Figure 1 (cartoon, helix red, strand yellow):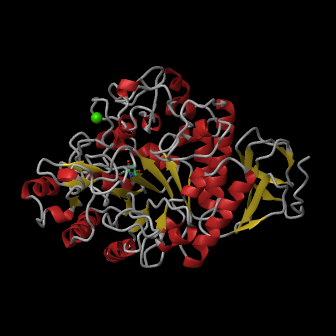
Figure 2 (cartoon, rainbow, N blue to C red):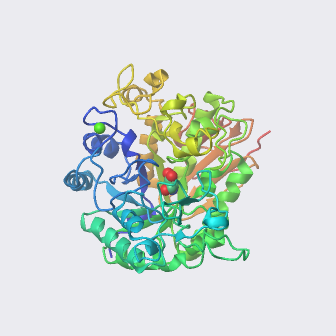
Figure 3 (tube, rainbow, N blue to C red):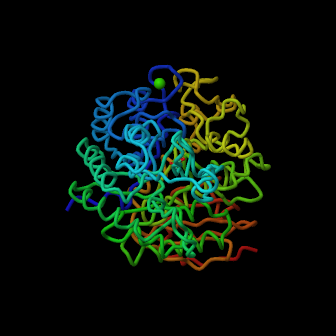
Length: 531
Ligand code: NOJ
Ligand code: CA
């Protein structure tokens, strides 16, 4: 049986537009990414997840896919994509693609055909077209709101309305249509045939919906029972390609419902958003970790540990605020931030996430400690959330600013003039600057990833007795991770400190600091007292 590599993989998320620009037009692309593969291999990650690279009008950063079997010209060609997959494999990196099954672009061939074919047609049945309510159908079919703000229905010239849970440029597929089911099976095979190792499933809990449903106490479009049949079909296809995996974007507060997506005949893994959302607070973190392990253990699915992605406020910013939790509906941009504190905590959080059993995700720039860019000029913001919220929610552009690679001024080796401007202070955060500094965030991630290969991975943990504001656990290999979330120093047991997120501790772990250590066999972990 091929190796279940995803059970303990560290997966690096590449946001292609902002990673590296090979042709100097200011937008990241495959040429830039291919040139930087040695950086990613050297970082010590196992796989890359790429945000959508398909042709797209970019109404939602590529999550409005116009052709699921091609690559956007601004990123390269299909041949470039195939060469990229081969080169990544040669560098020891697996590739996970983003597949977007909830909605298409309104420029997709099917949606244009649906508009042309008119009411009642098979073409329209691939989407959710409905007559309106009220006088002459001038009101939308129901009162659903778009997740990006505004109504979830848009009217077309012949009077019908179509559903879009996101932007109007993203019409929702109707998964009752066999055409839709079959087409996505074909899309999976298309990319697996090109060597892709896994698929990230966008908005995975939203696919089944019932706009005509009477209110029955169920959410009319989130986590409907019928969604599982879809993933059973996807799993069958995936199982036909040994060594390939599915990872779901499943935002669900209920762990029991979440676990259903990870049954043996559905997805292999799903993102742990409870961990990502969790405040930097010892009780909350311990509870999330325990719940995660208790949810995944019985179904045999590996947990994932996620601190960031292209939709959320960057950790060094979030952890420097008075409220360190994350809420997708309320990004709280502009809240006062103690940057030094945020960096200290983000470093400790990285050691925590990478020590836990299972697989972990790193969002590009997290390894550089990039902050959220909160002062982008309004007229450059592209996130549909910004526009659809009536310019009240600044949206997600601040975590999507192109990476700084080298040099003293923008574009910091990114390529051309970046599509979102980089702050001048990023001079100190370039890969080049951090390469030269053993105390940098980049150095911390590199060392942690190297140590993780020998000491950490899938499995279990044993909690150690410790004061309430200290998290301490030991893994199968004997590595102990201690995180001090309290206000005073915590006395460490004797042993070899392999890595510390802060100043190398001299017997005492300072607040907001984590260590990985191998205890001297003679010494018991006393749990000390955090006075
Ligand atoms: C989740 C993606 O992560 C996000 O970026 C996107 O806007 C929505 N799904 C809609 O596709
Ligand atoms: Ca480019």
